[in-house]
Image 1: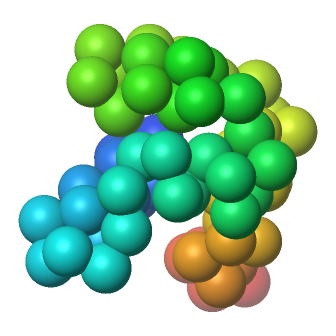
Image 2 (image 1 turned 180 degrees about the vertical axis):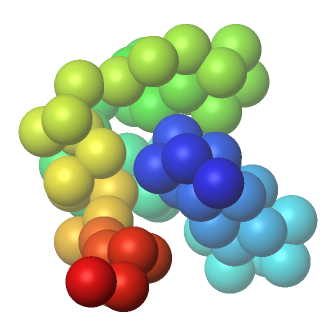
Length: 68
């Protein structure tokens, strides 16, 4: 699963469960509403800084799947 897929899944689950709206996520993560809307609705790409803000907002972390 990609970072984009994971973020979209997390955002959509929060919206579907009624915990958040796109507007409240945008406000809480300090992301412009139109950027987040295009990401969620049109599956547009976002900058890494925006992805980082969303990860912080939802408490997501990147982990290394590969075992060395």
